[in-house]
Amino acid sequence: MNLKKILDIDLLKTIKIKYHNSQKGTAVIFKNSAVNLAENSSICLSERFEFGRRYYRQDNRTSALSLAENAKLIITGAEQIYTGAYITVAPNAVLSFGGVLQ
Image (cartoon, rainbow, N blue to C red; front, top):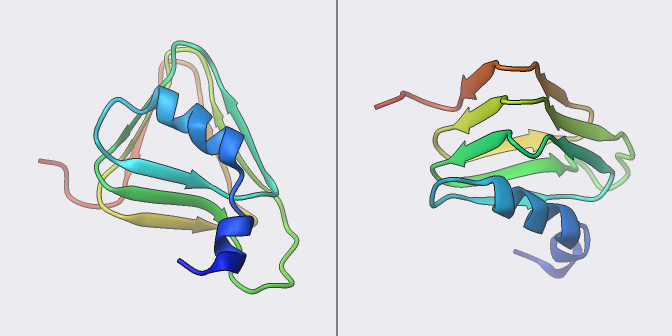
């Protein structure tokens, strides 16, 4: 990982995701990303997940990740979500993507 990419990471939001992660995977949240997680929501990561990463250096679009009450986000495999993405998981819903569930 190069220095420019490291400086684009939002450390506080990355730690916030780590608190919600119930598996061994890691998450990296980049700047220009909003993260809104209900206390009883959960995130299950099997590998590395990058959210809000810039596709090119001048890209200033924002991204948002929002999990409502009792919502669950399951990401299998290594995934990258670039700027401009808005992911919302409704109350009591499950969103799963990224590969084959086992």
